[in-house]
Length: 119
Image (cartoon, rainbow, N blue to C red; front, side, top):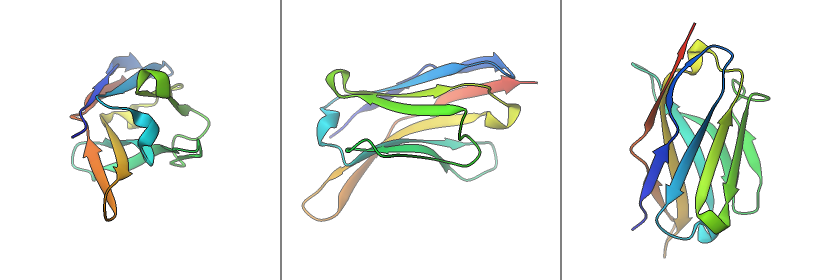
């Protein structure tokens, strides 16, 4: 079983920055992919950014050029650097990973960290 713990959320003014961290209990080297989703009140959970085991990254259009996803295999930790934050970025941010299974993949989620951007 994989445990994921997010940290780094908080309250920030529009235009500010935050860095989220996701610490995994096991080696992330074997993960197929890691990523961040967010969920605003009353809305569905949406993909923010994803990074593959090979380092390929993809971002939601709404965060391109503002957010950067990265991973440190030695620390078993993934990061999301969020710059130029906007009120519409306010949401709970969830870390997730996909890892190989005998058939298909296992998917694991963290409990989430709140990000609130004031105008």
